[in-house]
Amino acid sequence: MRKLVIIAFLFTLLINFPAHAKSSEEKVYTGWILHMFLSGQLKEYTPRGGMSQCLKIKRKIMRSQGEHGARWECKKGKLRLRRYDGGVDGTKWLPVEHLGED
Image (cartoon, rainbow, N blue to C red; front, side, top):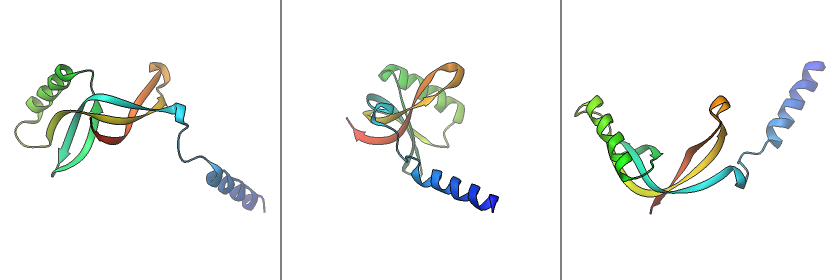
């Protein structure tokens, strides 16, 4: 009986837990984004401080991976960022959704 009560309690928490972050926990980033494409599909995207920083990171990656591998591209665009607790490093904003080109 005790296990059944605990399972019911946990199930209730799971159902009532908010699936989305609060609006203050998210923001939209507009600027230069480094895109990674695998087999023609966008797989990863990270915001960069500017065009020169984006191209610098892209060159480093291209030198380390060689000719074969993912295709990398620097473009202006928009991302939805969500705030995460970074522990000792402080708050971090991580991309959760690509909103298209700028």
